Length: 309
Image (cartoon, rainbow, N blue to C red; front, side, top):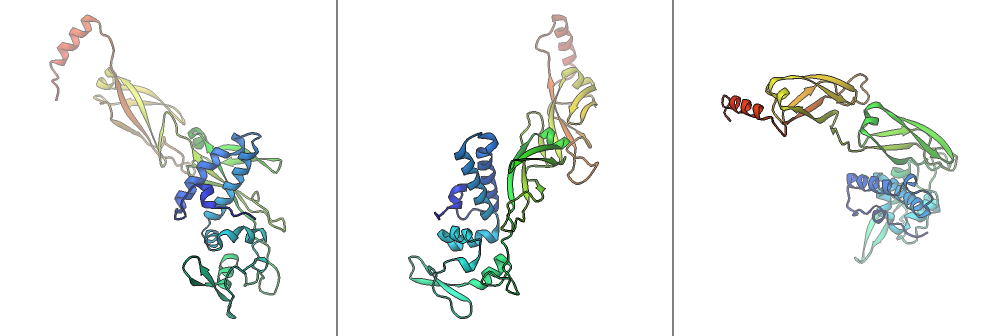
């Protein structure tokens, strides 16, 4: 089986941390998602490769094994992750205690490598691929991750997505209050092992940027335009929020750039029913473009009583 360079597939360095791997995966998964590339076999295969690479590199233990086995990792996976079926000839001979040595390319040295400890750590079984008592352990079913983009309004209200899984349509509920980075678990819709046991599917949520609102945690900020006379004298202004229109009383002398806080008018807090963040209104004052001659004279007279500070 050809070697798959998972780092190259995701376009990251071998030293990349978990955040860099997650960011690269989300970007590529959106770009090559089958829903955006209908009837494109190349995009479909690329999407599978991206998910496979992320499945390994996002799991610290799988990544460690992949880095250790290198070009032999695909052979290991092809044999079901069973150490007994893997060809260890390229590694130096094992000693009677279960440890072994492997050559360090280009150095003329060897590195000690304890196979039994590694198998116990990675697969929860004894060296040789068997569980205590001699019974073969099936490979753990694989969890899958799929990116899903939703709008800010959908994140506020909660929404659903219909997924196509093995020819069947599955409706998944996405709760109100999710944020970019939230994961929605769909039990039993992941990969299957040799016994037909299924892992889980995780929807990796990304909330799209909004033209009106800026999101910061559970709080929202939006700009509100008010006329100069309301800003100077005060008055009521109707403001649109994600939860509906509200009437806000502007205090006299409201300057452009000032922020007003509306408690509980922000985003719902995930997992905390009935609790919301706040909405901040950033004031933008508008002035008339043209004035009647008599109004200009009047304003000039008033302006003399309020010199600039």
